[in-house]
Image (cartoon, rainbow, N blue to C red; front, top):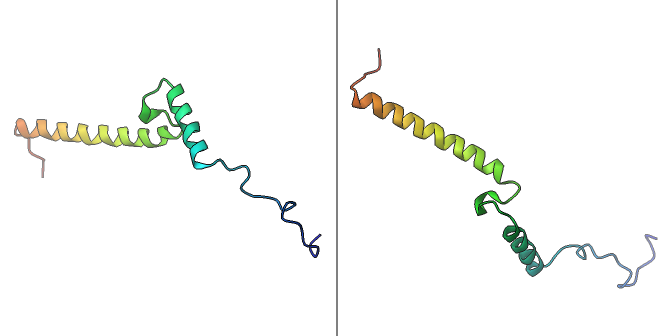
Length: 79
């Protein structure tokens, strides 16, 4: 087993299950064209990117509008 050399044809190929680049592109194209979601939300992992993004965007916009309103009315921080 370990001491006997194998023929080239008998050696297991670790790459025989891996798709080529063109097969992967075609597979991804079919995936993205078959979904009804927007392109930025189509990927299964997109929620891990979008939830923090929109959360931080909402907090930053809310803080900006809050302090803009305070500045417009002349409200100062208490010391």
